[in-house]
Length: 303
Image (tube, rainbow, N blue to C red):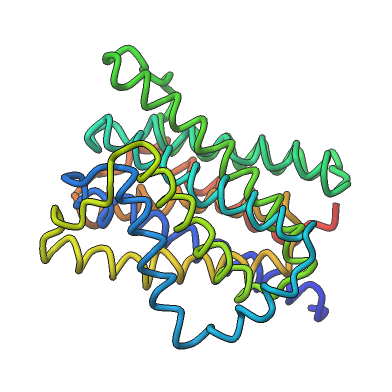
């Protein structure tokens, strides 16, 4: 194995690990914050990690001050799309269905590679070969089988489900956009500075939204378990996952990253089984195997 291939493999594994942490968040952590307003949850999930980073990354302020205006544009785009808008949309989608129909939301969020691949082609000039397209389609097919088996998505369960589906598609577009903008940003910043800047800018955007919409910042609604969850999320599935994601993104192309992130639905289903005794059917296991095979192939692709 060459050093270049090894670096790509490590990058792909880091992105898959980040996806696992995000799945853990969706299955076991963020649902427990459902008593709080969604915009406030988004604000907390960025403010707390940013505060915890201060003792370790405070020297990154100097690097951010030296950042050219063009790169600041990409930092703001990443923060608004993947940080604020994407998080707002997926949390709202999960809250709308009360975490009882996660399959629809998870699958629709996995439209993310479609947006990421299209944007990578437009903005980064990344060329997409037919082999890569075939592997990406295989990964999407695996994600579909895991989520729905051979059945079709049922969006007729009520207005809330249809609305949640719309928010999930918006989240997919936002996260896909952030993958591409993040790749461009990492041409100028190391992943630690990019993470630090993203959380700071996103927290400011979320705060501005709270104040601008008249909702205020309802810290008074926070209880002890809310604080424990928010801090736990910030240390693991929040900043920890983003650090892993950006570390991986410096070693693989944006289109490879987008497909590796399909580890999220696989992890979500496995965690659902371990934590909630939700048993996978035969076609879901087939989808899991197909997805893993496709992600392995994509991580080593040179197309």
